[in-house]
Length: 199
Picture 1 (cartoon, rainbow, N blue to C red):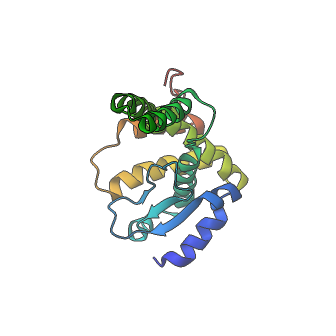
Picture 2 (picture 1 turned 120 degrees about the vertical axis):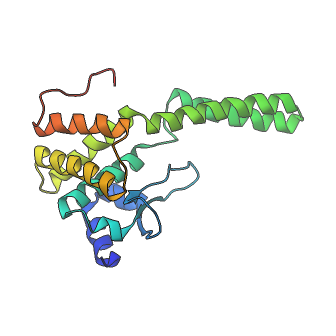
Picture 3 (picture 1 turned 90 degrees about the vertical axis):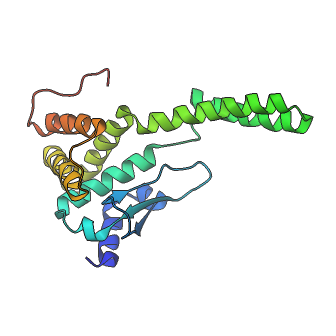
């Protein structure tokens, strides 16, 4: 597959906010069909890497939903929003700076440790089930504005999750993918059982 026309088509598919943040990059050497690194706070761009040789094995609706889902996940991670952990990261960094100026090694270590622990919690939350499910639902809302019905979009995303696992040679889906699949089956009307609220 020639990546250039597909990249242009995918950029047109994304909402304006996604086009401003996300940058689609061809990465033929990666073993994953599509990947997006965890967005770091000092980087404005949020790259989405696609192996277009593997990408071409998916049908167009699956590709559309997979891109919208990846973009939604990447866009949902915000380091600078009013939240307990973001506040702790900021306080820890500020404290480490003050202690560094004063020459207090122990104080620097304690403040830096506080920042590191809060940063770890932000990272864990971004990889958690709640964030994964929210990214799927955000992708379905965007797809609705692009001509897909919610149930059709859920079916295409469900099929894409399963197809990607086969293309990448994985023997089974991981826990988050199984949870997402069950939620998508419920949204698509394929299963009466949804995801419990505690997840």
